[in-house]
Image 1: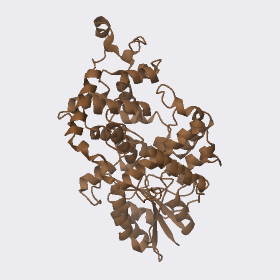
Image 2: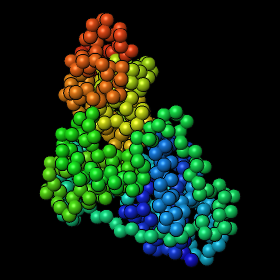
Image 3: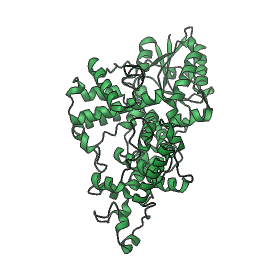
Image 4: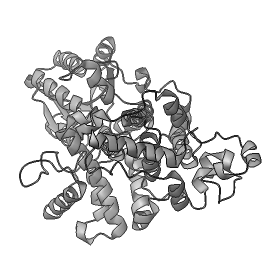
Length: 499
């Protein structure tokens, strides 16, 4: 009986899963495996700690992963299979599993997985593929519409500006008939049917119970955070269907209003692989060309392709995980003592309402509205002069959709030092942003209840209230004067340019 191990990672779905489909087609028995790599520090080309840190799941992502694995395990059980769990160095885990399975098989144990595109993942996959050459490892693209090396400029170099990248991807999709979604194969029965094998696996540290991984973080917010979401493949499909039925057609405007449910909220599902971008785009287009989409649909398609652009940037410029793409910014005069400022920003205690609302929404739900993400990033970087890398690390830890490439690209964009970045001198005014996109104050009043009774005129600038009115509020004074701190940032940038 031929046996395949399918190493699952950010592809927690049965449908449109190339590695799972190929394994089920090629082999009689399929053993789906998920490895918690958190205890393992090393395996990349560079310093072990540097390789492990950005790759490891943040606490919010670990909480989501726990529930997503439960959902996937149930789906596999309904298909007469089981999901196997392990912890540690992926190569050591895979070699151990291959050895155990090989003890009772005359045929080679095959290994299948879907590729990753972050620097540590690429380096690790290369090592593992070479080490397991006897198992005929096969890898596939399950995360992207196109591989990062497939969409390049005519001179063979990567795009560094989104608009021409989008045009190239849109043309490529239309030429090839849109996004191709792979059919699903029923995964064959696996390890759970053999009592002797189960006992042997247990002895070696493998388990069929996700609880043994200890993925749920110790932070008290983790349990409440996940209550804001429906997790899993079916939930992702249901969310996509609801969004495409109505909200997508007003997406171009509604996506900027944080007090409304105008965004897709599909990003966590895409990040964890409960939904593939191919599935999302195929459902959006429904057989139409990109050119035939209406305005809202086109904007949503661009958001899907923005994720591709981020993956391409990280693939071609891996140093951007730790370094600005614009090397001049290594000399930027960041605040040398950021700890107190960073802590107040993280807790939503800056005294600037829309900033605090966004940071509290993030901590409560593991997600923040995209318009507000830009505002809070601009405030941290430019009004507080805190290095963008501190903000990127906090988002990576607390976002349920903390895609490494998108998070890095977004923070470098906000700092003016990345690809297709907003100019550094573009400083988001949080008062004007609040008054424009949260006109009725629904968003701020929800997440900053101390200000629920403040009139609309002062809601986004409570420091203009009378002394008596301010004293009656249990709300901190603003940390910095917005005008003065903006000028300080511009002066720092001018010194950088002239230095």
